[in-house]
Length: 404
Image (cartoon, rainbow, N blue to C red; front, side, top):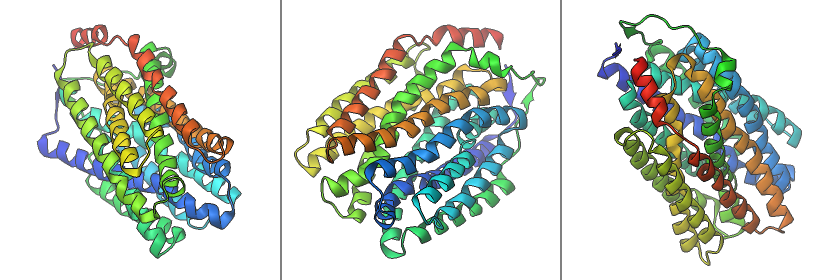
């Protein structure tokens, strides 16, 4: 059995730095979902155009997932993380200088290229520094950071927009990225080496593409991400335009669903490391069913409190599906993990490209009603259920154990 040379202190350093950087990542990314309300008034955007601004980021983000995963396998996680953070911080600042609808589209598109390498690089960084039996919980902690980042982004963005404007908000968030760039450069270790092991040859990218498991995970993540990005993109507008809440209040109430998502993520991550191989798909199925029922109830809620309660249930269910993010770390060989994770994240970010614009179009089509948008998200959660039926991980884990 190979033994990782990193001690507990080194693993804690890696996980802490990545956790905090993920929070910054989500602040830079999700703040647009709040800012777009004010930006749409300044630039006279309709719901479809608002969705296009958000989706332009995800289109580039999705494309870069495929390239970034391969680059991570080739050059190691730290270099790719630093380059990614540098580019996205620059274009977070540039977003504050946007002057028109077209300029927003272009800036957010390049911004998406900058962030696109970070998810797969951070997953590989965990694989480089954590043994397999700890990776589920480690990835669960990073997934928790995304929810904390979403909470912080919504609340802080609302406060900043109200007090200093959306332009200055992007300047502040971009500057924060440069602070973490220096911290990662100074304190994050290089690629870990394994005792008693020789460097394995990199697996061909085409061989990774031909792996059925990779595309099954990609489909599951796509369905989950349709809900995640659909809700995060349009909930601020939903609370303001449908439930008639003030902007700052939308940031405050958004904390509760995200908290339930955190609970779901950490429960399911703990279960993943403890349960037998081959049972992972049941966690995904259960989470999908909870999400479907909760979204249906949200769509028909008659009050803010009821809508908020049912949304908490939806986020809790989707938190269970999030174990899909940890499965590559436990099932796939490390030498091709970046490419595989990149393909999986590609599916998730394609959902991020589709969901905001499609939901915006649906809202326009239904004259401001969100019923069609919620129905779209409900059908999206059918995808993880159907895909999980064909997900067989026990034989893969046995093969990996025998090979080790």
